[in-house]
Length: 150
Image 1 (tube, rainbow, N blue to C red):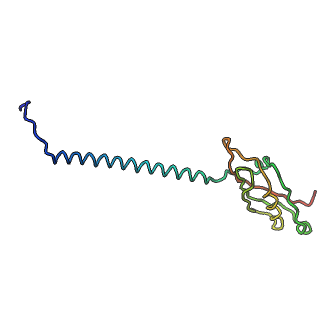
Image 2 (image 1 turned 60 degrees about the vertical axis):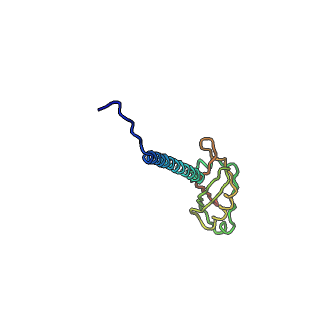
């Protein structure tokens, strides 16, 4: 074996094929990185969108009752009073970030007293509920009791 051998010429075709192969590998790596970045960006955007539509936190009724700022007393419907209808109307409420009642649903209670409860509670205002120092929307239960004995 000779250590001082002649240099062999590499054909231009082989050099072109090697350069082309390198280009393909670089292009594939760049495309993969770009696709990965787009997937991460779209996932981040989806997370931000979904975080804007968070479900309100459930807060016990007694805790929310303590944070009422203004409360309108429901009017006892005259026909319910004449019929001596009493009871508790249970409402499911969503309280917004500002403390306003955003949504109300009747859960139970005498039919004759339900509308009066809804009309009054819609006007109630609460202190905004804070989570980590930021106001958030909450859901709670509100009990409106009607009694003829006062």
